[in-house]
Length: 383
Image 1 (cartoon, helix red, strand yellow):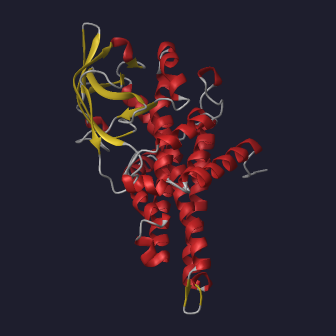
Image 2 (image 1 turned 90 degrees about the horizontal axis):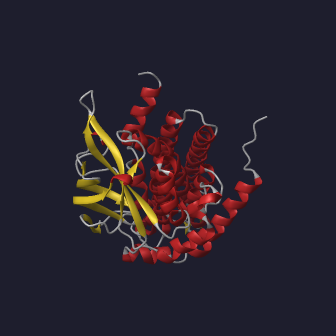
Image 3 (image 1 turned 180 degrees about the horizontal axis):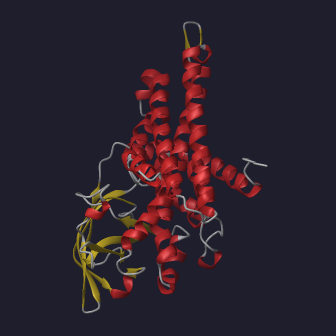
């Protein structure tokens, strides 16, 4: 018999994060957006709660949970704010998870105890100014010289890469040419502060204004040969696995934003009056909110299904792509409709839906555009 109810331990986590989001994040996050400032105090509290360690074993200081626990957490955070949610998502899924999945015992011992507590954050250096969806077109190079990797190149749009608590960036770089003539791509850990590693100023972004996103440059940046993450030449495969998992997490975050739009709209339509009645009594508004609820519900089931297959050890690439596609488009559609419901107030930054509208669009772009998700789904169907 199918049972879609959350087990008690997941529901307890969900409620805990829901309370944190409403009590600690909601009252202050708008000011961080206005100042485009990274919320260090909020991040520290999330670290104290163990959120950065949710899917990692206790031997490394983690909480001994799983990836679905992380997804539930991201959904609840994003119901209130996406900047805080993406900071956690990138730190865990893109920063710490590659070290845990592919790192040596020495690398895990060195980095994970700090990453799983939120004391330090990792970043994921894949995208470049000239290669986004075409990740195989990257040009950053790393040459092995006298026992050191010498790295040269530029990365773009890298989350969590320039904060005061950033500890490392895992960089995808061309380390040679394979027998088939294709680029040999490897992953290399570059600690923050390494000479030759320069972090640019924060981007001025449309949304996610309280998260950290920067361009990185490497000019004869040298790190030890032992900083190779995983097998040489397997970097592209490692990043594909990381992105497949990350798409489930982004889907969960998207569902949170979509649900947050519903939460705010329900409060508003019961209070706002027009033509002598609360606007929630008008069918035009009711239908909008009904469609918003249907989108969020469907998207939630999609990421639950993808996470379920992942945790069972079954192939989940298609399901992850479906979840990311459906959820990100639900977030964008719900943000647009919520803004319309709020009318002129929806265009004001003092209301959360204005922030949600600004934050939603990147969800259809980051960690694989909607077009890439459709391409992956079609490929998995044998087309």
